[in-house]
Image 1 (cartoon, rainbow, N blue to C red):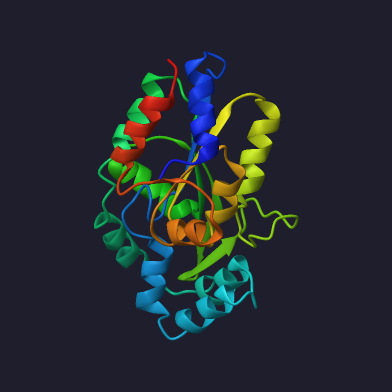
Image 2 (image 1 turned 180 degrees about the vertical axis):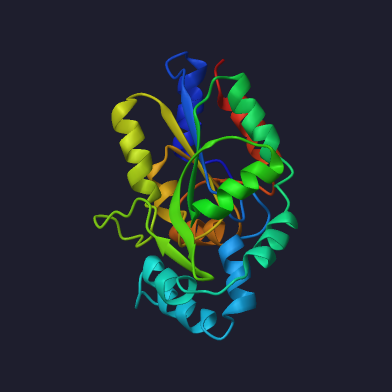
Length: 235
């Protein structure tokens, strides 16, 4: 479902007045098929996760407070984490998206409320490279210890990486560039897709945008995103 704002930008692009776009993409559940943190939390702290996530959805605690109560201090043996990371799969269009951005000299940046340890290891496993803003994570006596990457108290997202803040910072430094955000989660991706000029959404993010009456491009895999980007981009 294409947004009205995107339709206007496409029309402007056809008139040769929009020449540049920048792509921002979520990682967990979007660039890779599974959400690393959520999947491991379901396995290792299943007794904590449902109630705390319910509190997030009710607005009682922030997304980062959830992380501190559920993820921080989670005990996951490093060999088991490595085995799990090796079992993950990229979205079928992930490498196509990176290749398309590279071919067209389109800036690409991963915006993730996940953790640098996991993302760096997955980059190595899949042999992909991209710039990324995410949260910090390290092991301390066998426990996960985490720290926020780019929080933004002025935004209501309450995440460790405020995607609205990162997109707005890019926009301030690159006026006139059309910003694109791709995501799947109503908690960590909402402020980013609302800040961007063009939004791609699936899963709970798509449901949330639909409930709000916000237009967006729906997608199943990143191959769908590449097809739309090709249509709107001026080389």
